[in-house]
Amino acid sequence: MTPTQLRAFAAVVRLGSVRRAAAELGVSEAAVSLHVGQLRKELSDELFTRANSGLAFTPGGLRLARRAAEMLSLQERTVVEVSQAGHGRRLLRVGASSLFAEHAAPGLIEAFTARAADLDVELAAHSPEQLPGLLHTRTVDVALGPRPAVVDAGVVYRPFLNYQMVPVAAAEHPLAAGQADPARLREQTWLLGPSAASEVGTVADVLRQLGIPEGRQRIFQSHAAALEEVKRGHGVTLALAFTVRPDLSRGTLVSVGGGALCWNGAWHTAVLADSGAPAAASELVRFLSTPRATQAMVRGPGVHAGRFRPAVHVTLWS
Picture 1 (spheres, rainbow, N blue to C red):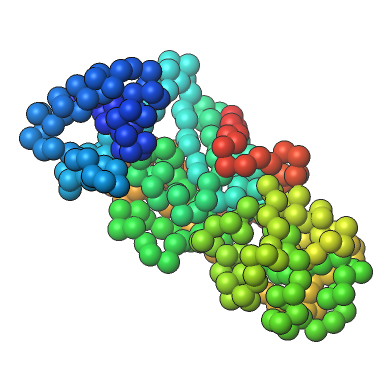
Picture 2: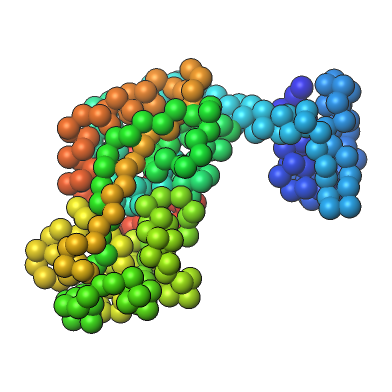
């Protein structure tokens, strides 16, 4: 198998069509079909057949689809690592949920990279449900975020930080001094960060538990942006307790329900169960268990709304 053959097959799998795969790769449909045909011959497997609804993959084709993504990602990573090694550098790719990436990652990465002068850390925010797949395709080396309800047997999870989510509003909001029963909470406008769009995590769990209608939810590109709108008296939000403690002390924000409402959550590290992760990933997992890491995450520099970007944003620390 050659990288060109695997790249053609991976494009067919991702796009569901030989024609679209050829357009993306900038080659003819005949070239894509030739590469797929060579794979079929070498593996003695049809890989996929055409069906009314698109392409129907054989069990072998599905297995190759996963392996192709892994192999191509490893090839790209190897090129980067060889180049970096020539300059005496190492690269660690971290995938994180948006809530962790925005509020806890900056302090953590700053403290972690200060320990290793030869290490670059690439951080990208993703939806929590995507993180196991990104590990399997070697797109990221370690994932940080909530543990899914159904655990992938090929991924090892380890908790490293417990936190609380609290509902907050501006001091002049009607709920600031009143009762916050579920019925009244469902009537409010909820201003939320990108974690509300996920199916996994404490924010999603709370919204389901309270039964907040989608029509009452407004989702911003960052949790900080949502919080700024709440401070202007436009609604309520769910916030990490340690991030809003100064605002609660100053009276800029008020805990809805007088502090009686709160939900516990935990962030976990996730790495592949095999031994393919780089040494830097193990170093980060160990560092996360230290008091210094906890202090850096809770009291770190944080990130402002203007600095945070959606999931495609990549930040590089060195």
